[in-house]
Amino acid sequence: MSATPPPSDVELLLRGMHGSLTLDEGRWERVLRIARATGLHARLAANNANNPDLSAVLRRHFLSASRIAAFRSQMVRAELFQLAPLCAVDHPVIVLKGGAYLLQERPMTIGRFVSDVDLMVPRDALRAMEQRLRAAGWQTEELSAYDERYYRDWSHETPPMRYPGHALELDLHHAITPVTGSLAFDPAPLLERSVAIPGTPFRVLAAEDQLLHACVHCFHDGDLALRIRELVDIDALLRESATDDGFWATLLARAEELGLQRPLWYGLHFAITLMACPVPDEVMTALPRPAGLTIQLMDRLVPLAMLPTDPDGPPPLRARLARAAMLARYHLLRMPLHMLLPHLARKATLRLRARIAEKKEAPDDGAP
Image 1 (spheres, rainbow, N blue to C red):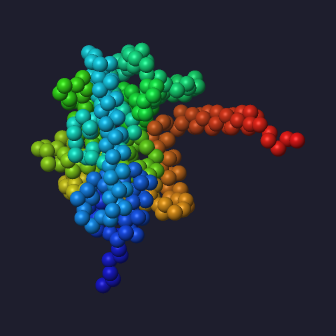
Image 2: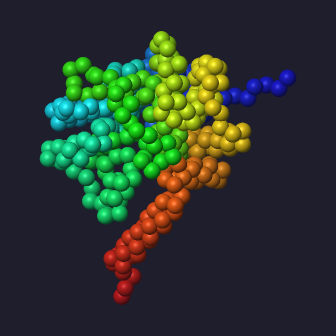
Image 3: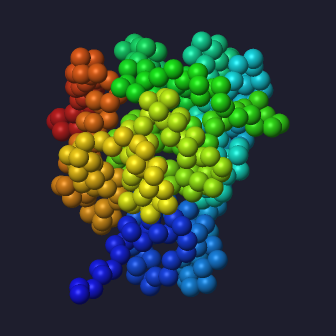
């Protein structure tokens, strides 16, 4: 019988999302480097906080990562505190993703890096909420007329906003899927089942809707390149909610109601295969499976696109091809072909014009 091959650095990193690791110094160095490349080093630090085998050097690295993650979480809390008076309105204001997890004080937030604040309001309140934010000093970057139209007519959010001097962006949503996407649906049921956060004007999505949103964001509204952090979120949400009474039945019913069974299947499937997430077999059986060839392609391409490669060199050709394929899939899911092709052609033309203009403006240093 052949011996089991030792785990790869990536496999060790993913194991480190669930508990402490016992590694030699050289292996720790490689695992920590890919953890930094994927933004998972503070989570690795949290799970090894009480590891007695760590060297002093590793402890300093982990302490630094933990403090940075804690600081970013505190910035989100401060931003939400500042936003609270503006969000005391007569319609629901939903905090999405990382901000929601922090408001709920979920264990998964320990070591999780947060990069922005995401809010969702009903579409008929979107313009009023945006004007309210602008009046308070929030600003957007200057956009071309075409990009402005893209956000207003085709996207599920306004252009990103930022308050002068603040580090975090604010994304204001009216849905969790692009209005032109293949899975677009009326978000009213999300708002109706949302949960109030006591002592604040904010609400968060119900547990099953948070999980569905994480799956949609990862497997429908993203190109998957190095997005293993999002699968780690899906795994953590599943593990935290799995013991709630009726969670699995509610999740399956909700996915069918909202037409989100496909991204849920992918989220559960890859949480099982890459994160060893304990999903009951009957849950997977209850979900419609993609076609066999589709599963084979995704099983091959998703890990290549999502997982980090050797940090000492550029990604290998197979990883670059997988990421290109996933990028193409992302565009096709986000917009129908008759809209996508003119959109991509327009964006390519604008980029070409910008490059030509930059070259014309650049000084000719070689002139006599």
